[in-house]
Amino acid sequence: MLTLRTFRVLGDLWVLEELFDVSVSVFSLNPDGTTRVVWTSGSKTTRELLLNIEDNHFSLITDIVTHAKAFTCKTCSRVLTHKHAVTTHTRLTTDATQFKFAGEQFAQFRTIFDKLEDMGLCVVVEKRYYPYRITYDIEAYMDVNGVPEDTPQFSYEALHRFMSISVHSNAPGFYRSKLFCVRGRFKRFLSGRFVDYLLLIAKR
Image: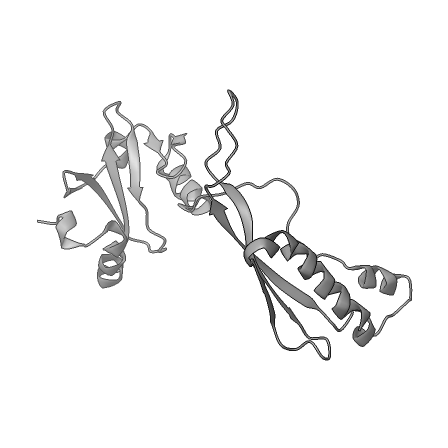
């Protein structure tokens, strides 16, 4: 007896097809009398094996016209009246989910230099971007002290306060990283010291 347990999944039916050089299609009867297409073969052979599946058991279909009056596509649920139409339709559909996105397909962003080249003006790569950079990272903490009183519209739990700012640059003379931390009564001047250091690098 041929059962679904013979195959791990329906997709393994290709093994049966290659072994017996036959094209296999599997159907299942719906309560409304239509037939659901469970699996269709992609092979093109002169011999065809039509099977009905129910409760993991296969049964041979000898007359597909008597067996089914209409077929339901497993992918899009479209109802077709002829088996030949089902075979053609199945080849044009896929089980993959299709997504539709707004706008056009992705295209690489055109820089001002690309647009200048279209006008016949070429800027060498070495002069396109400033060679020196400053990078920084700001850390903060949640302070539960000094929180404003709640209002009918807002409820305060903590204040977001500066804790430290680290700075690094590839400018000559500033290769070593610099760290600015909150220190006692000078915590209000953290952002000022940070900006002053940026200006110092820029002037050099």
